Amino acid sequence: MKIHRNGQAEILTRAQLVELFAVLSPKYRLLFGICYYTGCRISEALQLQRSDVGKENIVFRRATTKTKLTREVAIAPGLAALLAVAELPEQGYLFPGKKAGSCMTSQAADLALRKACEYIGLKGFSTHSFRRTALTQMSQAGVPLRTIQKISGHESLAALQRYLEVSEENKRSAVAVLGF
Image 1 (cartoon, rainbow, N blue to C red):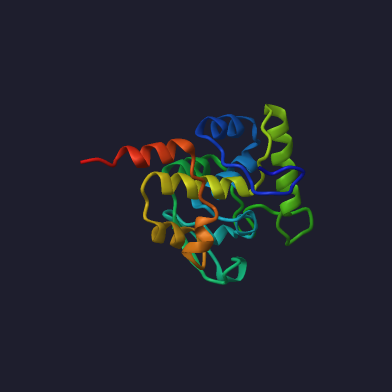
Image 2 (image 1 turned 120 degrees about the vertical axis):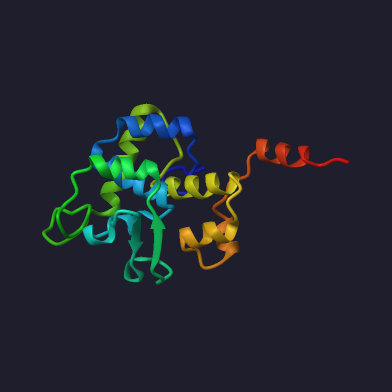
């Protein structure tokens, strides 16, 4: 659990996601929606340009990714709904910063999330929770790890697997399939 911004970010439940998105402003709802629906890092979402968002895909340019690989992620229906109501800029950064020609800082995004979490009583969550939640939910839904790796941009399966939460229910379900 993340305590005082140290440790691993918690995984959000679907109910917590609903509750959190209900209290976020439209700008932060879109920002964290991109992180959740694409499994991207907050830094990657903040670096998105208007031209990176197409009708069907979002492109994370190699210059803005940790692994220096360009990747395209399909726009899920939930993200399409957020994009449809968003007031997107004509050009430049999707999330402009206070300085002309800059993007919002990760500190500003983190502060907004911490305030929203505090307001609804959530603890142990950070901007990285959206990435961990998305990757864990995909894994639990049976999406192959190689596919998740391509979406998330992890260099190795070992690095990806550190993100995936395994609950007691997952373990019970796994052993329940055994028998002859």
